[in-house]
Structure formats: structure tokens, C-alpha cells
Image (cartoon, rainbow, N blue to C red; front, side, top):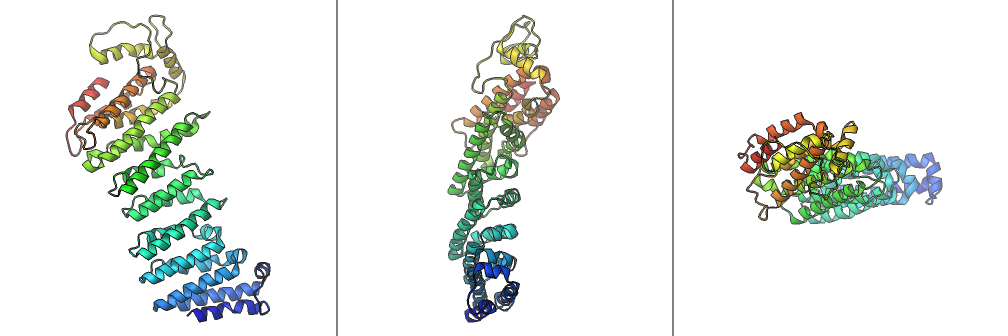
Length: 438
């Protein structure tokens, strides 16, 4: 088979005068390209698609040898014919053929570089996922070498279509195979390190998938997902200090509902509560950042801000003090004071629609759901501490919003939280917190 492949390739130098021509000569000689196309069709139809596995491996060897002989520029014309039969062999029933396909594609990609991704990006990544999930160790090893080469090509290609590639990662991030998950995590981490790619922009497409990986039984996969989540959250925090902080504002607005939904994950299955803890950490940071972005209060200042004097109200406890502060927070100064709370209230009143005005009910839903008792991962009360801190910050922000507080949306959130979950009743702590908000 290899001999037949070599004979077919031998037609190329004969056509240009008995010796291998330079790349420039091959590119400009249409007759040579016709011979090359016939050679590729011969290798594909007479070898790569035959029942005998040795013939299929011979065809793959011939295709890769042909690509190497052509070199970089001439091979670009023939990538559309060279790559498909090799990708088809990624799914061959014979593991030795699958491994030979890895070798063949590696050699073709090494020569063609960006050409294999420009025309076959989706098929290449689908093939990589299939090879990573292979049961044969040698094929998995070949897939890892191939993946490293494809990563190098992607990062060196100036016009690589990252916007087309991210949805492919989004689709694969939901699979259960641990090897495929490692592949996807590696690619997300790689793209996050590439300067020309802003992974925060694409956050809604893959964030929930990352949260779900946190519950994976494989410790290495779980750890990699946690590290990646931490890195992404640091980038959002850093973006909040930019001027203007539009990237951070957009990232929080796009991801808030998803984070709040993940905060309710433990309601369905107890093993998902580790996802809820990770999502709660994000929610708390979102609350801090959004308060900072809206200029309502310092993100680390939980002490009550000075407020203008207000008429006393009936009641007791913290709810009564909040009730007393509400009119002043809206900008109505009955006592002539000019404290920080009143100033922030005027800023909120003058704005048309602050970010927190839209996000407060969404973030509140996640915080309240995390106050349920009995978490398997909450031996030290971390759930409750983070949830109560997020709730307290949201209450302070609500007071400062004053008349701009989206009351109907908050009431809808409270009524939704007070309903029983699918697996258990609402805890007393959650119900009391809802009544406190009311």
C-alpha cells in the first residue's frame, strides 16, 4: 500500500521535469495540481476507505507524505481534499488506524498550519473530542500531541475565528466524559490567556457549564474548574477598576441570573451543594462590585452610613431601623442632614436606571436560597455567612436606591423564595429573612 502511495506521489516530480520542483513552481503549475488531486483521490478511494486496515493505514501514510512533500504554500490548495479522509479515520473501528490517523493529521497540520483550521475547525475539534474519549491509551496519547499542535496553530493565527470556536466549547462542556472535560477546560484556560480574546465577553456561554464541572467526581477536573472560575472572577474584579468599567458591568449583568440559578442547585440534589457554594462566592463578589460600580457605598464598608434624622417609627430590631431610614435614603431630607447616604440617594435618584436597580432582585433570589440549613458542605457555616453578608449589602443598597427600588420585582422574588422547594420545605431562616425584607 505504501508503495502504491509512493507511485502516485511520484507523478508530481515527473510532471515538472523529473525532479521535485520548488514551492513557487508547484504553486504556479496548474498541471501539477491536477496530478496531486488525482493522487489524493486515489489514496482516499482505493486505500483510506477500504475494508483492509493495512490499506487504510497505507492511505493515511500516503496522504501525510504528500502533504510533507508539497510544503506550506502549495498544500493550502489541497487541504480540503487531504483532511476529510483523515478525520473520518478518527472514528475507525481499528485502534491502530485511529492512531495512524492521529499521525497523519499531525503531519498535515504541521505543514498546512492555519489552513486546516480555516476550513475544518468544527470537524477538527469534534475529532479531538472523539480521540480524547478513546478507550485505547495509545490513541489518547496521540490525541494529546495533536491537541498541543492545534493549540499552537490557533494562538499563532491572527484571524482565528474565536467567536465561532467558543460555542463548540459550550456544547462539549456539558458532556460527562472526564477526558473531554479536561480538553475543554484546557482550551478555555488557553483562550483566557490569549490577549486578543476577551473571555469575559463570552462568559454567559460557558459559565454555568464551569459551575457544573465543580461537582465532578474527578478531583483534578474539579480543581481545574475551580482555578479557572477564580481566575475569571479576578478578571471581572480587575475590570471593575477600569475607566469606564463597561466590561465588568456587562459581565455582571450577563452572568447574574445564571449565578443566582446555580445558587439554587442544591435544592434538587444534595451532591450539587458544592456548586451552590461556588456560585454563592460569585454572587457575593457581584454584589460588592455592583454596589461599587453604582457608587452607592464602598464594597468593604458594612457599617451603617450616617443618615439624616428621620421621624421615629413603631417597631423594633433591625427591620425597624431600616424602615426608618427608607424615606431619607430616597432623598427626602427631613432634618437638613447631608450625610453619605443622602448623597448616594441623590445620585441614584438622578440616574435613569442603575445596574443594581435591575440586578438587585436577581441577586437577592440567590442569596436567600443559600440561607437554607442542613448543607453537607457547610460544617463551619460558610454558606450562611456568605449569604447573610450578601443579604446585608443588598439591604443597604436597597435603602440607598430609595424610590428607585424595584419594589414589585423584589416582592415577586420574595414570594418565589418562600414557596417550598422540590425536595424540602423552606427553612425558618429563609422565611424570617423574607419577612424582614417585607
